[in-house]
Image (cartoon, rainbow, N blue to C red):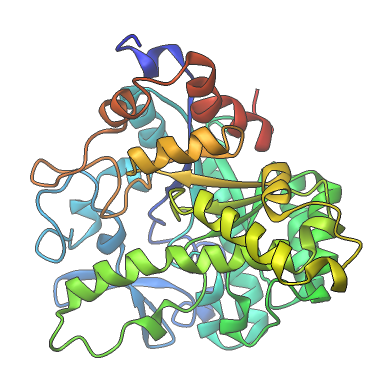
Length: 389
């Protein structure tokens, strides 16, 4: 294959994050509530997100693309140390041009990858205001070019009526999908398989948008056990690997719980959770389905798990090589490409990390695949899924 892959294909990067600017919430909510909503304070020389006296994290931890070394030594301390492409829309578009990427799908940081962190603010009305403020900010940010900067609605899943209203409001503003919590039971809600969520699935299906489940959308804190002997960063690497399995559980809930059967036109995306496990999972699901009496309990289920998956579920990869090729060979219509920019293990590394830039990585992974399959994975499937030309 020619070496100008990114020049020939309009690459859609289906999982990136934006580093929220300091005034996302303070500029959109009453000044009297400034201390209660997410805002930046300088603590021990580091810009830190705070709300109600509680630390919510620091922008430097998820803004490491291009920095030398690995965490924690190379974590940017302030916004002055963070590349503007991570928080400024015009700079992001210039970055995309330089990298040969046509469009990026955008996910949050501060509110959590499944939006559950907003609940830490306590007051449900304030929480609702903060979710709406984020979605309004995202609409404004993506307006720089809404066909290249793809807005994904932060959904307040803990309130069905509010969630549906926000879904409809944001679709009306041009958002292309919803970001849903992959493990809602971590927040005291029913699991994905429960009919409790059917009204939301119906609203998304009617709107013609996919439901996205970003890895780590549940409560990752339960996995950060005592790290005194293992070491904090070693445990972080372990957890970052194991949370892929949370999305396997999500996919299983959607299939075995009948969500795919009840909503055959609704699409689901497993985000930043890799794809190498998908062929093994589907083979396992099919085997257990056949031998576990599923059809006896649910004669209405008319497809096998792998067939439900093929019809309406998608996975994304950004560092796998052989396992990605295996997944593409098995499910060529269900695999999407991402970079995870600008997170610590993204495909835009500093010179001391082992990853590569997306163009270099893709040239190697797709070297022996057909042009048709390559174009499908890098562009066509995502374009259809997110309604892009």
